[in-house]
Length: 237
Image (cartoon, rainbow, N blue to C red; front, side, top):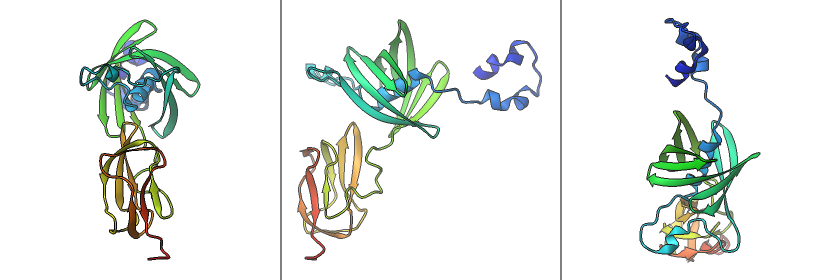
């Protein structure tokens, strides 16, 4: 309806029952991605709008880093195109988002779990959000833009590491351990779920084998490169 109201013929009063059929492609044409939509999607996908749940003052320092500006990176996908964005937290709900050849500074504040209030160059506007896993939809000024935030660890169906071991690809919290020492596992079997960067990443067995060493338990906080599991070498059986 919004596109129809903007149609040149409609504005001139040249309306008949064949208007929509004649210009359907123009009426349903997807508008170019608004920088505001992409900036909001990047900030939300990185979990930078997490609201404090208690009285601890440290809960207010989301994205904070001492002595320097903290920049987080994320890849957003929309309609087959990838966009690499860098988001810097400036404090006080203010962010700087750089993507491709553009850069904007805006404030974004969550008003509830599905809405944000934003300010850009003195203009205040509101957006609604729909978040489902790695999918974020931003509703703003009558336009809808959908973004996917793919798992940077390449998905659940790939081995975490070739060879006998699985190591943590980044710092995170071990949410699930799917095997015990001495247990036989199959290639591709889910062995760990690691929570990192506000997302859960599944690590799977690189091959068939027997678990020789289990290096982490559920609830452990692990560092990048920590040995999580080692399979018994194939030579020893």
